Image: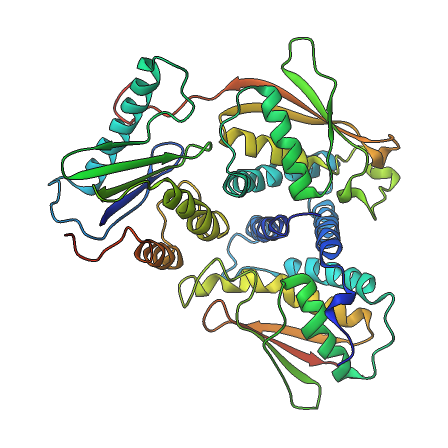
Length: 145
Length: 178
Length: 159
């Protein structure tokens, strides 16, 4: 199983953080463009999913899957968005996303008085902790199968 | 060493620490700003800055989802009071339209150990709480106003904090589209 | 009980407020004036220790007092004990905390080192205030070389 990369967006859609571990193919866009497209897609898919839903949804959009990878999505009630791309062997990533939020993001961004909540994350401590956290997850494998 | 840590009640200490630090801050502000209204405003703003961070801590600790309605919001904030201030307020005095209500606290840890001198009678000592509410709720889509209705420091029998719903904030539209 | 994080967030806002005020008053000053932050700590520490030691026997001597600061007092406020206490037995004490509460979430090394004084100054005041209430006048400074570790230097003023 592999985790490819992560995007974190703030409540206004600004990219707070991006990191990749095992990304073999690049999109050929600048990271700003890519982040903008990603946020736009999430925005549309979210509103589409809710609009078209035949029954009341509570959670809304959770993930999409292609033949090669799965994009997992979690949004907090404060509208911070976490996106994790994994291979298709990685199962339910909700718990991991929730943990990244509560044990890494809240601890090292929200509780770091020097991190502004709507500016790209600069903290080395956050980067180190996130990296360690993702790497110790069972879904993480250094090399894709 | 004979002094064991068990003699100190850390929970009580922590609450007193907040009370004392806050008291020192208000005193400093009074010195700096020299005007009760400005101090009240500053306290509200400071609370706002705390609120936008506390709400993340609250959400991550409780795993709580989006609020269904204002009643649900009131319940969650009530829980947050208990978590962060150690007291559970009553939710009461709903307006007929259901867009306004109050949190009523029998005891207020912030004002323990505090007495207001006569020349500061219009200081809104607990305005920080109003700010926290505004900041925290703004982060979860709710634009609200909050103010103090009753204040134990001014001889009222309890502390009443009013909250008024203004509007629901929408998701930001992606850049370049409108 | 009140959640501990409230104190962390309140402390951060204290820092922001003092810096804002010092910038308003002294636009051209090169160094941040953190003296008010130290004073806020002093008043808090002064009143805090009173409440903590109310029902305790008097301390034997200065060293006994310092030990109390390093253990019970530190645990009450910073959730852990001081890791190392050194003294030259002539009124200088060095208290080392290897994971200081207000630095733990900021950095693990040298990043933001130039801003570290903001997050240790309040505590210098807390220590000075606590000691003052116990009848010891002192000067307290802090030294941060690599976060989240911090050394507090206490110099007892004997008159």
